[in-house]
Image (cartoon, rainbow, N blue to C red; front, side, top):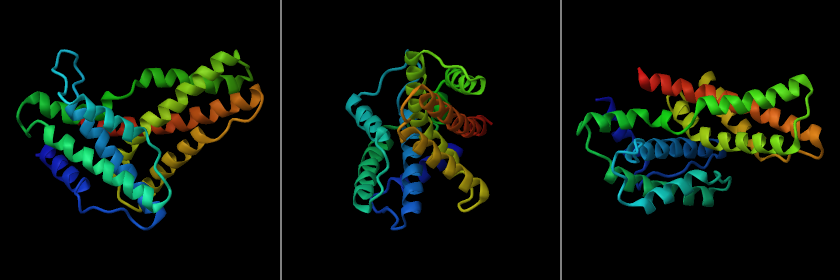
Length: 229
């Protein structure tokens, strides 16, 4: 029953008649939610187990992943273009999704997708490293600092679609909804801002990234726990 509901909601999200809002904030959240649905769909059709047969159209997977990597544009025209392209690949993914109730694996696949795309332990390692350097006043080797910073930036990009799924489960306009949306916005801003010159500024930048990544991870894991119930 829950799987069928997921599918129907997703079909509405990717309907050809759907349009983007004129309000910039609403439009941004709308596209975040859409990206979350796309991420969930991708996880449902792409096998996690190496023993499972791969999706026949690998080009579709490449197109979806490329769209998930795109930044959400601020202007209406480019936002509408992104929505249209996400809708197209979303409908294509729905077309190759196994029928509801076809097998236990298909149902499990739909429910497991939120948890399939990130390694919590590895993310926490990077968070702990960056936070400990700043809190202890330690200056790591520049190459080590650069590697951790790159990893944290990548984790922000990875986690945002999952957090957008959690955002969708919250009542629009509620305090929790606003806090979750703000966490997404701030994490992306922290990722995109220039760190400044010098090792101290670079260390501070890594620390900020770690703080925001930790917040995103907490939201993403909450959705994993909710889906696992």
